[in-house]
Amino acid sequence: MGKSYNQVSGEIAAIQRKTITMAFSPRFSFVSQNEFRELVEGKIRLSLYDFSNGKGDNATYVYFNLDLADFKYLFQCAKQMYLPQPYFQTKIYGKTKEVQGQYTGMCKSFRLSVTRNEIRSDQSRSMYPWSIQITNGYGRAKPGPVEGTFFEEKSSFVEVGKVSILLTDIEFLDRLEALNAYLDEYRHYAASKLLETGEAKIQELYERSSYQEDIAQGSQQAPYEDRTANGQQRSAAVPAAGTGQTVPAAAQAGSNTRQQSSQPILHATPMVLTQGFAALENNWCVTKCMIGGNEYTLFLQNNQVSDLTEARDRGVAVMANLYDYQGRLYYHSLAATN
Image (cartoon, rainbow, N blue to C red; front, side, top):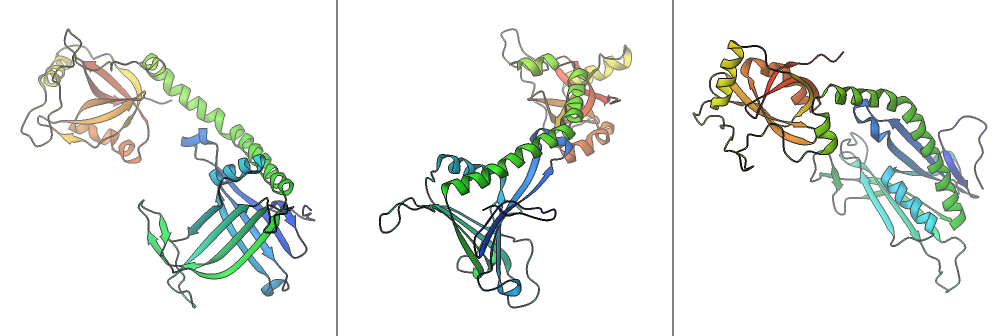
C-alpha cells in the first residue's frame, strides 16, 4: 500500500511492506538561464529501508541516485511490463574519500539491480515479477576516461548494506507513473519561470542580427567567403601565426579605406568564439566564430582582443558590431545590448 504522512516529506511514490519501505525522493532544480530550454536537471533517490531486525541502529537503510535518463527507461519498461535484460548500475563518489575509520581512503559506492521474472523456479507464474535490490558499501575509485568521472577498482568493493523488495506489475507501474506525473508538473513549473525571459533574450539576439535570414533558412554559402566567378572559394587562407606572413592585402586595404572614407556598415551580430587569437603582423590577429550555426574566420586588431577575451574564455555568445570587406569578416566593436 502507499505510505501516508502526517507532515511534509520529500518522498513520493512510497510502498510499505511489513518490514521494508521503498520510496522515491526527487531532487530536481531549474537549469541555468543559459540552458533554459532543458528546463530541469537533477536526480531521483531510490531508497530501501529494512527494519526486520528493529529500527534505529538495527535497521538497514540503502539508496541509489537515479539519473533522469535511467528513470525514463525504467518507466517505459514498467508500462510495457517487459525488461529486455537485467538492469544494473554502479556508481562511486570518487571525489570524496573517507578520512577516518576502517574505510579510510575509500569512497562510497552504490549498486542498483532491477530484474523481472514472470516465471518462478517451479514454473508457476510470479505474482511479484519485479525485483529491486540496492547495495551500498565502499570501494577504491580510479579516474575515468572523461575528466571528473570515476570507476570502481576491481575487487575493491566492501559491502555494508543490502536490501531487496519484490513488486507486482501494478505496483511498479503505479509508483513510477506517480513519479513521472510529478516530474511533468515540475517541468511545467520550471517553464513558467524560465521560458519567458529566455525566449525574450533569444528573440532579442535574432532581431539584432542582420543575418537572421541566413540563420532561419540555413544558407549554404557563407556571406563572408571570397569566391571566384565559377563559385570556387579563392585561396583566402588566414596566415598562420609565426609564419612571417603579413595580414592579407584585403585586410590592409580595408584598414586604409576606413581611415580615408566613411565608417563601414556595421551589423550587430550574436556570435560565439570557437578558437583563441592567433597573432599576425602589422597589429592584426585572427580567430574563428560561430554565427547561425556556421563557422567564419574573423579578423581584428590586437588592441580589440580585450573586448572579446571574457566571452571566449566562458564560451558564451557576445553581441558584436561586424562588417564585411572584400568577402572577409572584421570585428569593429561590442554592440549595445540594451
